[in-house]
Amino acid sequence: MLSGTPDATVTAQCDNVPVAATVTATDNCDVNATVNFDESITAGDCAGRYTITRTWTSSDVCGNVASFTQTVNVVDTTAPVFESFPIYISVQCNETAPLPTATDNCSGVNVTIFSDVLNSGGCLGVITRTYRATDGCGNFSDLIQFITLVDNTAPSFNNVPAESSLQCDQVTMGEWQLLRCCSCNCF
Image (cartoon, rainbow, N blue to C red):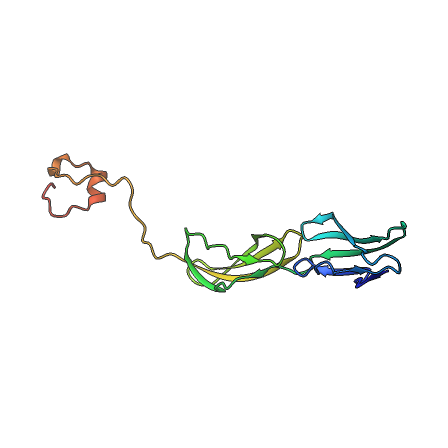
């Protein structure tokens, strides 16, 4: 006879799987009855979902057998949790806002930009960005951040000719107008 058997069927979150029970055996003729334990795992559709089958078996010297099987259905229904992250930020228009990080109770997390909506406001606008954190079993949570685009950098000139000195009669009319040289007496 087996004693201390657990519930035959259990559903448990992937981060709270119960340990195997300690099952004992008694027999009316065999005072040294022992219990053999076996456990197997059947994979599910993701790392956080699987089935554990636990079997306890005892037999006496006459070949009588007592057996008990427990099925533990492991599930992952908990979405990832974002770590502390600023909701309102400002970034230069040519910079990229850093991705937030998230944790999960059972697996790794993939954080992606789920959507970007550019709204008017400020010099360049405000992006309403939604980040999505997804765990290995497809559970997800979203975080919204407001990113104000700023531009604090003045334009710079390219291909500026080197400074030079010219006589008035060496300057073409187009250059003359561009330079607006009024101090020369060329006319």
